[in-house]
Image (tube, rainbow, N blue to C red):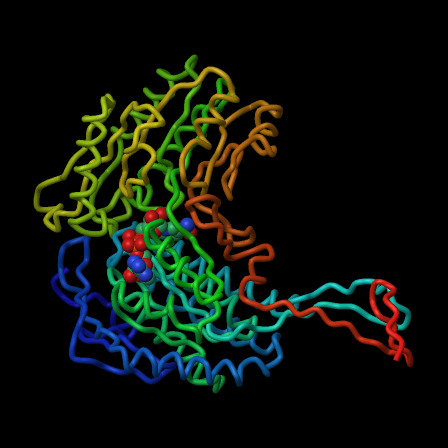
Length: 510
Ligand code: NAD
């Protein structure tokens, strides 16, 4: 793209942008992060790096905003989020295009990500009237027991590059209706997406005169993430990214008795049984493995195929891979776009070498693509390799389009293979058998946070709680009762009688 794309104008993105925003107030600094597009290698713009002093100003302001916002009735808080959802509807195309251009996912997926933001806004609006606690029967006469949910304060959000806008919205929209303020440190690889979300938010915030620090962004790398993790003014830190990052953030937050919501790496498998529908299996596996160029936390990394249908399934998948179009994600006919940057490409190439060194046999060996269309140096061809599940490379998440295949004989063996990795995010079984489906979903089945039947591992709806077990971190976001992580629970006992009976029948005569 040689001229400035129109979607940047639409979103108010300049060449140089401030990276610290306290509501509508933007603050510059002397140092800048440059945002390169993996699509064509061009510079999209620059965003100033938040200084330590600016960081503290943002957190103080967010705390002050929370003190006001917590007194606003929850449905009124929901009304502001409703308006934000409507503004996102108006700018869905532009924001989706920016997601696609800055991150490299297809236009359809970029717009799908903005649709997820809109959906979570709608969800949060309804939720704002449903933040309900329980009442309990007291053992004492004339007593009422109940619980209430109160806001926690400032919620810190650290996000990964691969979902540059939706993950923040999942956290922010729920946190706001719960009565909190939000400070966001986006991935340093996609800083313009965060600026665009904040600029849109500012319009709604100023029309509704909400407290300035209700939404703040700070821009920078690991150092800023560490500041957020260690900051006692931030009772809840929601961190999305690698297991390595989550281990560090989780320990720092726990050391100060804060609460973390960790959404970390996956190593997701689909079990393909003899009764699986072949067409559905191919769609689930191929979209799961190469969608977003294999850079989703829920991407399909492993296919565990029954030995009786192994060749047939593999041939059908290889045939589908042969039809994949790889190229600019801004063109609708392409299925696979670039990886995020050249470091990710080098990591992919190194992973292929490790698979080979471990003894893996490639059914398709991809590599780096060259030519004018691939001038950014970020495009790769997907790979399929037959491996053993317990190899160290297979036990790790390779964030690229590398699909492992392996055989099984008995369902229990397949479930054991599926579970025998350190991560526990998403899983699936393709089957026509009710018994197999139920076994997979039972307590002896998948150990993942997400377990699907006749749907792949990738993609989730906002109505369910999203997250995973083991090294995926245990956090839950988005739907179901995930909102409770953004609130504190208070148990209340009210005595409306004229005596003071003690619990457990204790007598204390004075
Ligand atoms: P990453 O861990 O490199 O970075 C994620 C974020 O954490 C960035 O904002 C980064 O600046 C920050 N960070 C890194 N180290 C930190 C530290 N020590 N302290 C505080 N902050 C730190 O991840 P990435 O490469 O941006 O994203 C890819 C990873 O994210 C994959 O592992 C993927 O599976 C995972 N992911 C998980 C989910 C989920 O919901 N489970 C969703 C999206 C991505």
